[in-house]
Length: 534
Image (cartoon, rainbow, N blue to C red; front, side):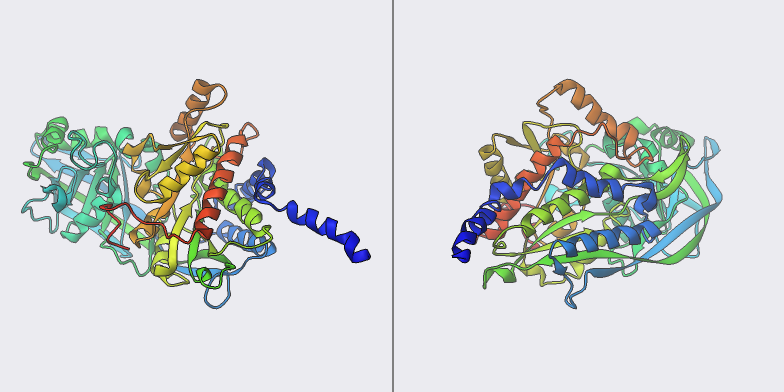
């Protein structure tokens, strides 16, 4: 009789764990709690290899373990060490330019930011010739080659950020491809023997103001110890005004050079300017790693396949003091993404029956230093890479209020777009392409490394159609990049509106569960740049 009396209570407990009830576990409080701790001054900005780095990893590990996750590494542990080198460059001799029209010494970080990209004790430019290489792109599929037959050995390349957008038939028009990323420019010129590359900063081409670049001046720059990509002795950015002054020293006009670089006929232009520079570099081995956790699938066959939910936990640590504050807390970027990941873990762990596929959580390090943690994860996955069917990445959440729409970075690149659009429609919302596709967001967060490994990925950003005070909310949202992005002021604020983040995270939950349970494997859109990698 006692058992019979308990049955209704047991049934009620199961009913409380229906998908709708599981969604209800994702609340403003469940998001805010982890964010508040990870973004607190106590973690000192979660710089790579710092005390805050270790505290963040310990917190994420213990939280996932408390929710019922096991270690996701082959040995059953949660920690995936990532071998990282830190290089801090001291300018011994500033950038000194000499040309037929005069000479100049460039100020850092006001005009130039410079750092060694290899673990050399010293880095030098010894009157190295500067050559303007346009966009610095070689793209056979577009019959585009900015380098032609130019010899860059021992020279410094001056390149524009972004890729050509004057012809919608080339380079996806206004949507930036990887060719437009500054990391591509450094890699491509390194392959050709340059001793350094200067990327010209403009706010439209970078997607953020020059102060974001300046925040890294004099700080450690990080690289994978087993870096598989070509690296230059010296990487540099310069302001647009500094680039103009550099060109004038050689008798050239920057705007005229940029105009010429918009066509296939462009040929590299030796500027007649030589550069000297000396750096003294301090190289250290950095202790950091990814947190990898696992919720094993319930289906005897499909549990051998995995979906990875990723979010980076690092930020910039302690840096240049601004307004009496030197802690770069990274509340939105990306304590918020970790908070959403943990909220999703809490919801999925509460299901009475786990999803069919295995869910891997990857809290990755050193995203701000070049996506290093996710690159190491993708190169050394804890499960066979071909068994990973999809990646959902969270980098920043909606702190500005609920929206009718949700933007997808990489809209249309794989079948996860159709899934997300269907889920959004069912929920009375609309999935839209990233309205800022010209910023190249697809290549700027950790999902990119999963895509490089051939794994279809999904990455969502805040929509623009706010339910309340639409224009005001848009202005506040747009101001984030100008005033808060990669600044000490990116702190958790009581004025945050997390109702939109709740709705977005619940939508991601439904997409995630559909991917974990659907027998059909996500696929790249035929002809996509990453299709062959699969």
